[in-house]
Image (cartoon, rainbow, N blue to C red; front, top):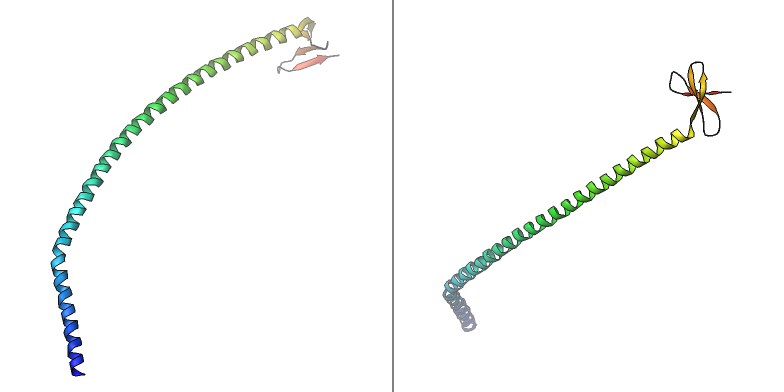
Length: 136
């Protein structure tokens, strides 16, 4: 049994020493290749970052020009609609004034006030408070 134990110890020592020698030989090249690979990856990353920055600035400029065009168009539309609304409001005010004049007419005086005739034929005057007071 001593012989078997001795041979087992010898093989384990040989395997341990041999594997460490192999690892010792491959450690330096692995480190240098890793460093080289890391530098390449870093350079590629920097190049792509620069490209992305250039694209982003182009996209920002395009977006700014599009938004200014859209806002200018919207402002023009708002101005046009405001003009339309004000012109429509002015015409409706004129129509309202014309209809009020046509519906009422003077029919004399009552207690020192001018008497008006309403659209249904009722007679009234405007009192001191500005309200209509109907005459029977």
